[in-house]
Image 1 (tube, rainbow, N blue to C red):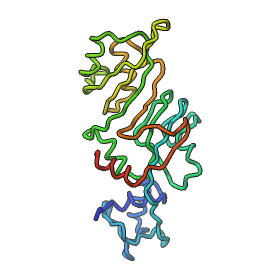
Image 2 (cartoon, helix red, strand yellow):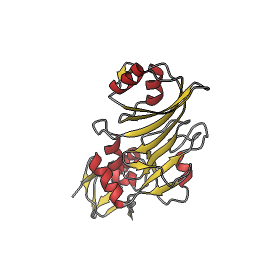
Image 3 (cartoon, one colour):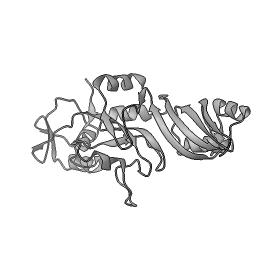
Image 4 (tube, rainbow, N blue to C red):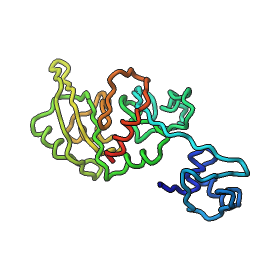
Length: 239
């Protein structure tokens, strides 16, 4: 049986932030199975009866969605600049969702939204190599040696990327552009754009077509669908 820290359970139930939950525990406002708990880090199981100020907390059921993120939307819960966020598309969903990882403001495509903290932490941990497939429209045309460089890994910001899969999909000689499919498992800030820039081909347009085994078939920009139990289990097995 999995045990979780008490302050995390309180936070995930939407009662308060984790920091405020810790303060509640220290103030003696939290009971587990009828007993006051004041020790931070106390672990509880799924069947523990937890109350805050005498009121029982309700734990959310876990849900994960595949979202087709449009361009011009930020991958955060709130935005200080008042821009539209990915959470705005889930106003009718009765769960507090947040994105697993991120997609740039001007990048569209596959993004997972969840309230499953364990799954999110697993998928975002650097040791787990979850493939993400991007399609980039780039300036110019990749030379054979540039394709080899991308496949071996390029250096940007003092970081050497891991090996990537590269496939040229279409070339437009008149406009001197190319559509290129790039598969990576890392998630550095602006990584795809910086990888192409490292071989002197700026990205004009970018989308993420697949996350692990999940693709956007059947979805339009702004649409989402809930993952099945089998799909979620498969994601857990990846990580």
